[in-house]
Amino acid sequence: MEATDQNKNAKAGDSPSEIERLKEDLRREHDMYLRALADYDNYRRRVERDRSAAARSDKRQLILQLLEVLDGFDRALQHMGDAPSSVSEGLQLLQRKLLSVLEAQGVTPLQSLGETFNPEFHDAIGTVRNDDLESGTVAEEMQRGYRWGDDVLRPARVRVAS
Image 1 (tube, rainbow, N blue to C red):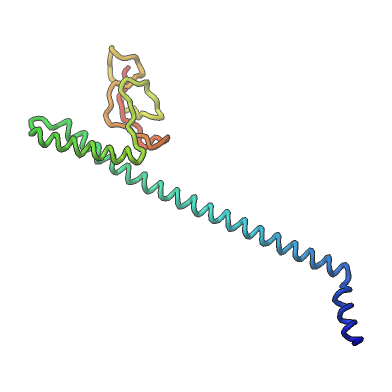
Image 2 (cartoon, rainbow, N blue to C red):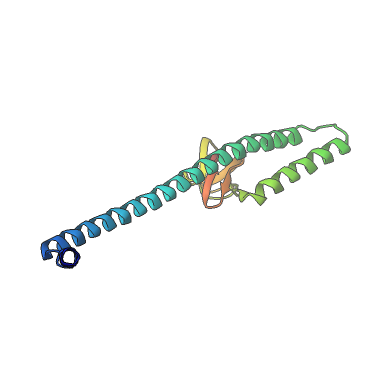
């Protein structure tokens, strides 16, 4: 009986320094746990942000390729000449359909003609003499520009009045 009383006293009578050491170990382990949890959360957010950025970049590339197709429709419609009206109407229908698909994705054309030249929205490829327009105003649009949300997807290629 005396031996079991000594074991109880040994366990219950752990020195205060031993208890403090164990408490410190527990605090340190808890801090490491919290840091690991925060690191994992930061990693998860970073991976999600990178994945989202990659998806947006891929979508942007696809939209730019579709804009080239839309430019092809613009050029084809300008050169229809004596083509039957059914061909012209069919091309216009396809052009409108493609434009509506792009607009559903947040892509909208920039309005350039008659606007003051702005290098953020316009890419000047030359000047043109025009007495009807103030100098620095967009006189001709050679290639339409587009926005995607708040970003300029492609600036308009324009000629500016001088």
